[in-house]
Length: 125
Image (tube, rainbow, N blue to C red; front, top):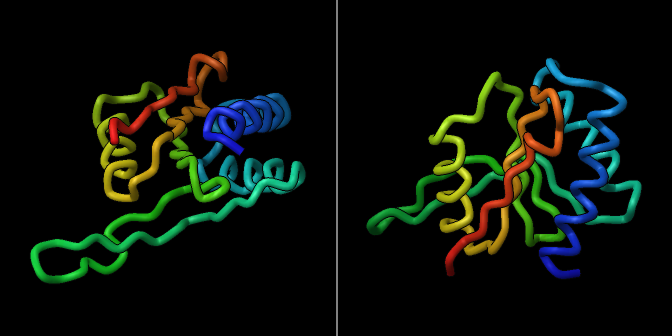
């Protein structure tokens, strides 16, 4: 599957989760539900993927965790906040660069309309 095909499937799963649960819950609840929905459609999904980062001549152990990694290609960063802040976009951009992934989805489940809460971020490799 391409990143765009994965993104399309993920957006459908996000919509299902949002319709069933609504806004205002903890990110961990949405992570569990989205993981469940994505595995139901036979996508390979990993949760809380620990990423080490090379720095100078050392490796920084568990520098960050990816909320969800789909098909080893698309990073999903989940939020449940009033408004997405510029730092949220920069965070996902950094994750993409450090992992050499092309596409990430920043998802804010605390939105009146879930589709306005989904932002695609592409890594300029």
